[in-house]
Length: 248
Image (cartoon, rainbow, N blue to C red):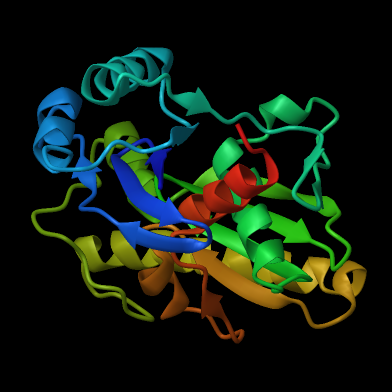
């Protein structure tokens, strides 16, 4: 059994993996629990894994804390995966491969391993990421934008007269500020996803799949006019494929 860890900006997701089969554990949200306390509680009766593989887009301080927690609990060194030029049938479009977020690279690995390329992958979370993956595994590049929640926070922080007293609803045309703010940000994100899919479609054979990953996948999917499907636990599935392709 391998222990797979997806260390994001707002939470840590993890799963135990036997080959391609994943058994996810309860995610840890940073605002609710500290890393050490949360993992100690979740891993109290977990058997020792063969390996611990980590995909992190968090900062070095949180990476170090996670490595310490893994070492203390399992007496193993965590293996931090970085985006390479090519691996698992995916070829990175970045001239500096390591600058591509490892979450984006592993989501493409997961999509290719599941036979879903050619595709566009939208990762919805703190950031909204978009990547185009050809049938032969070529990454054609992508985009990064603020996620809808971050868009709202940025606008509220930068304006004196835009204030909200409640979370907004997503509607086509709002008659109040909370709904206008929420609807504008969520619909902007959906429009970017649809535009990127349309612009990349010719290079991807005309009808690429639209895959949605990340915590905002369901909410974003409800706004899209293009057919789409979820790519659940994309980073964890990508880590499982990576572990199989890179034995210890």
